[in-house]
Image (spheres, rainbow, N blue to C red):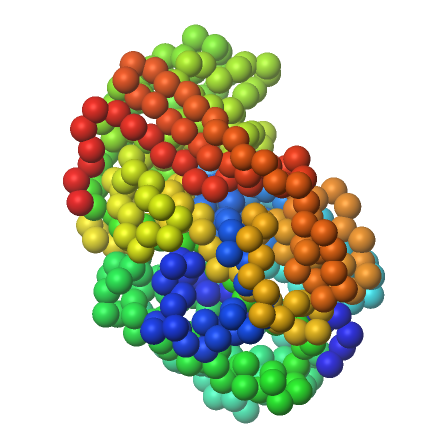
Length: 477
């Protein structure tokens, strides 16, 4: 075991309140035995590739520049959105120096003579963002989508061939998750021995999108991922692999109940719309008057939830909207206006209700979805165990995904300046005081539409707890 080494294990799309002993006994025991960060949150938009970029850069989307799963980036991709699930689109932006605007975990490790490795069952694009310099640095990267999306030496290819072929994908993706776990146990640590590694399980996210967050298929997906994780933990407790393991999820999900079409309401506004539960509106040469007209039109729609304006050229958000920078968004590549469709009202932090929302495209009614600021989308799993972390400790100090990179780099003695996250010193075995915590609410309203954002201020830095909107009438269930 290398001193200070850590394996990150991510369960894509796992809501914190669904990581229960009944559904995932191995994970629940791990969380109870180590440090459990009970007030951890994702970033906004709460989408996978956005969250991956925040994980590896220690930065919010407004700082690192991967502003949505799909976004307009005409400098790199002309005539259509850049799709972050496609490595070719990502490489086109990266070649221009216009993708990740902050140093990544892999880059910081390589500069210190260390190694990052990746084993992923997620999309090729997500795996590429996890270590976009793997090929340049000769670091191990393995995707269950195949050799075309991996970075392997001849020795790696020979060793992996002995583990058998990559299983077919599915929903659940249990066979691929078991295979990826075997790669970590039987090849990654015996042959590569990285300083930090990422093992990314694509379930329960993909299965919940297709069937719903509490569907039998999703329960099976959770059990399958938990069984693989249990095998990994048994191996680790026998003295193999890294010193520390950190488990996480990138976001949660809520239930989409009705497909709506926001396109018709945008006629005449001169915007390019990328519709979705999180929708992006782009304006060429925006003016205060045009942005105000668009916000007024939006908040009058029965499907409109949260409205955020990306200030450009000194233009301030008009009445009825909030500044996107306040929720960690607002990059120069961000949409002029970001809209989250309506979602159910917030419930108590310990509520088990699924939460529900309107959506546009991508799923069928009853499927799981994410991208917004509902508490059950933002409340992610985060826990860690090993000699670096306190045991049997529940940390209620708010934290978020950008805190992971600086914390793990600190275990290796690598400084991590120019980040939005912080070192979670209160959870480390060497001890440390928790930062000062305050609370604030941001609000905006116009024409009977109101929106509110609840945030913690942790050492003066904002972390969004959750957000919601209100208007006459409620969306159905």
